[in-house]
Image (cartoon, rainbow, N blue to C red; front, side, top):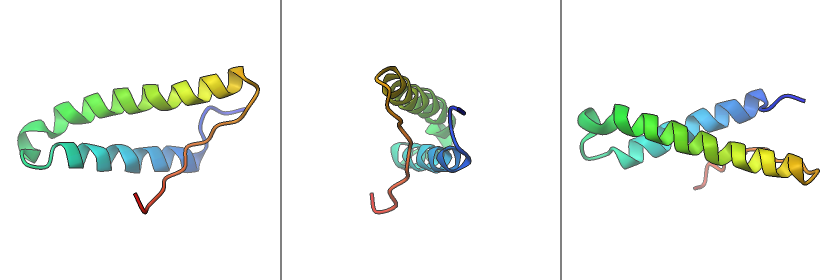
Length: 69
């Protein structure tokens, strides 16, 4: 079984970019890259935690983007 599906990867990328833009809004030019690295690392580690714990408990976890918010 693969770690992430194509849809999950797409949804995670969209979520990471959105969160990075929101956090770096007033100083986009100055803070975007730094916040991008922080968000990528923290978001990915957080989502992998869900996946690993679900597998450990014999369950399945998928990441799904919720466009409403």
